[in-house]
Image 1 (cartoon, one colour):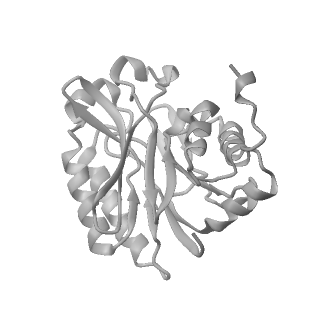
Image 2 (cartoon, rainbow, N blue to C red):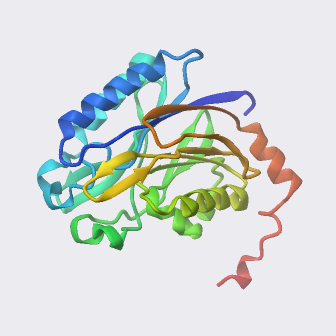
Length: 265
């Protein structure tokens, strides 16, 4: 693929326990994002944007089968002819609540779904949420892409698996808190460099209880160079990416051809 894609990352505050307020805030930011010139091709937002980490209430607050979220995002994607990587939501199923991303194409069709595989014990996720059971894959403009959520980026095996399956972009919604900004930047940059792919990460900002979130949403290219980075305020971060750069970098330094997986087990 040649040509560029314009990315818009909706770095927003999330009110834990108030889905109605969060849906209203997201709709406002989505409308603002598609009014920009040029209009973005792909929009993404943070992790658990519908409920925040109101884990003790999560059974009551979670979106049943993701129905409300799917209807809302599908309609918006079709109306504005944009791709949406729908952050992630608390999604209720028969066997419990999952932390799930839904992705949509320009016609509003669902093209990907991923539930967080690695649950973060420091926030007691494992007590309230179910872990997903498969990697997140989708195709965007004919190219393979991957999805991970927040804590997942500490597990390089997952991003490498997605890269080996052809992913050229990795989308990462997050609620990554203070004080670990250095970890956030370093891990995302490492995932980009080692897999020679674009890493597109949208973090939340604001305060939730005693926990503060620093934003710093990032777009990183396959060389590990930062294309765009937000500050700590609520904002829409725009960036233009060229997926042909992935092929150039992978040809220049043939990491995947030089692997020796028989020695890694």
